[in-house]
Structure formats: C-alpha cells, structure tokens
Image 1 (cartoon, rainbow, N blue to C red):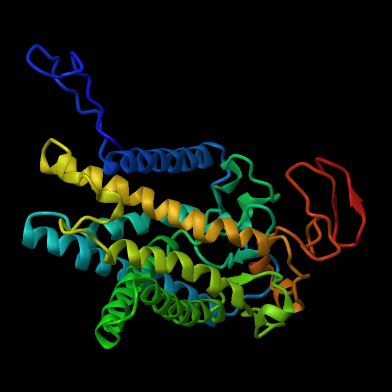
Image 2 (image 1 turned 180 degrees about the vertical axis):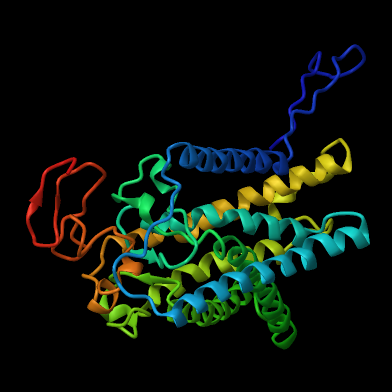
Amino acid sequence: MATSTIPASGTGGPGALPTFDRRTPPVTVWALVGLAFLLFEAYLMIAWVASGQAKPTPPGPTHISATYHNVIHVWEIANVIIGLFFLYRFLIKPWRREGAVTLDGLLSVAFLILFWQDPLSDYLQTAVTYSAAQTNFGSWVMHIPGWVAPKGNQLAWPIVWGPPAYLYFWMAAVIAGGYIITTAKRRWPNLTRLQVIVVCYFTMAVVDLIGELVWVWLGLYTFVGPPRSLTLFYGHYYQFPIYETLVLSFPMTAFTCLRYFRNDRGETLVERGLHEVKGSGSKRTAIRFLALVAATNVIFLAFYQVPVQWFGVRTDSPVHDIVDRSYLMDGICGPGTNYACPGKDVPIPTRGSAHVDPQGKLVEPGR
C-alpha cells in the first residue's frame, strides 16, 4: 500500500503539517485474516460440541475383523507419536536452541490446525467417507454456513490420527518439495522459477499418490463413487481417483513455494513488512503465526477445496465393496438409511430437501 502524506501547503516548506504514514504492513493484513480463520474454527468446534452432535458415528452391522481393528488403533497411536516427534523436531527443539520460534515451527502448528478443512470436500455432495472403526465423534461440518450435503455430522472424521497426520504430511511434503527445488536449480541452473515450480508439482504428485494409496488401502477412508475412467483400482474399497492427486498437488506445491521463496530478510510472502511492526518479540511471533495460518487456509481453500467440488458432484454410484462395508458408509446413504447414495441418476439432495431413497422412491422433506 502506498504511503499517504498531508502537507500544509503546496511547497511543503516551513510550517507544513507533519506527515502521517498510513501504510499497513502486508503481514498485519494477513494476520487479521488468520485471526478470522482461527475464530471461525473455534466457533465451529464450540457450536459442534454445544449442539450435541459431537458423538461417535457407529460402524454399523458389518463385521469388523480383529486384524482391522488392531491395524486401525495401532495406526492411531503411531500417528500421535509421529506428530509429537515432528512438533518437537520443528517447534520445540529449535525454540529451545535458538530462543525463538522458527518458520518451520510456526508452519507445523499452522498445518496442525488446518485439519478443520479436511471434510470440506463433501460440501456439496458426499464424495469421501471415513472409517467409523476409527476413534471419532462425527463431524462439525453442519455448522459451516451454506453446507449442502445432508447428514454431514455423521462423517466419522478421525479425531485421533487426523490432526497429527495433517502436521507431518504437510511438513514432510514442503521439506521434500524444498529439496527438489534446490536440487533442480543446482542440476539445471537455467531453469526459470516457473519451470522449477512445475518440477516441484510433479514431485508432489508422486508424494501424495504414495501416501494416499497407503491410507485408502488401510481402509482409513474411501472415495465413495469416483468416475470409473479416472480411478485406479476401481471396484475395490481402496479405489483411488487420479484427480485427487492432480488437484491436491497444487496446494502442496503452493505450501512449498511459501516456505522456500523468501526475501533477503528471510520473510515469506505473507510475512513481508514484519520488520515495520513495533512491539515485543512475542507480538511479532504471534503476528507471523497468524499470517501463516491465513496463508495455509487460503491456499488449501483456493487450490483444493474449491476445485475438488467440481468432481464431487460428478460421482458414479458407489461399488459393492464399499456399500457392503457399513463402517465406510457412516450411515449417510445406502442400505439402512433413507438416502440413495450419489450417482449420475440420483438428484443431489440438500439439507431438509426431498430426496430419493435406496429403492428409488421419493422421500418427503424432513423424513
């Protein structure tokens, strides 16, 4: 923003009024956006608990083997341990060593609290469900203004492994991305910044593909009805739409660029102007953190959650290998419910609207 001055006369000579610097550092604007995101997230969590909807989604009648139960709970414990390790490695250890919180430390916490956005891919229509065999208390999404898909509170969002997974997955991605950018620039010094970013994007696609294939194979979540022509392992509970990787690689790349490309003061794009902020070190750290909260939320919304809605409303009917596993359906649609699952010939219902049941009959609003 430009600096505005108010002179006493056209000459600005003796007797002129003092000038007033009305410039607002960019980091302050970003910090205000970040504060708004934190307040909104706090509202969602409080409204969710106060509504009485924060209760476990049952896995349903399908028999769950002891092996699957054990794998799920071991994975939950492992995720907590990995998350704590990353938090110590990037936040606590450097803080104790240097007496100040590093960029990676702030990013790790920002990624940790980004988990609230995870179920947003189901905003318009149920496209992804989570295994109700995991520790869960349903989901907070019905308190998001304008939420369309019915019964979103029954999404069995994994409250134990979800937040730490957000921490270590995104941190591992940006570190890997930074390494790839550095290596590419050293190997091909004539590459432009855009070309380096493209290299990073395709690297992120590989990282995501490997990570998510492991997660869906373990049965932690499933893609309910992705189009067959765009899906790997179609017909199995671990089917995986390739567009998930292609879209998710955009925020992964953007996060990497946010961390990697800094000015000569070591400031990321959203931290510009931090040196102009007066106050204690704690105040400046808080402003940096809020700015990074804003950046991570805006990037994830703009580069993933918004574009993925286009695919979410173009789903096929779910395959039997998913429908026959009640713990993957979360009681949202299909057998045992009065909602037909999404499909090409199924009208997209909204909260409280008339809808089609699994037998193809019209159900009146409110039933």
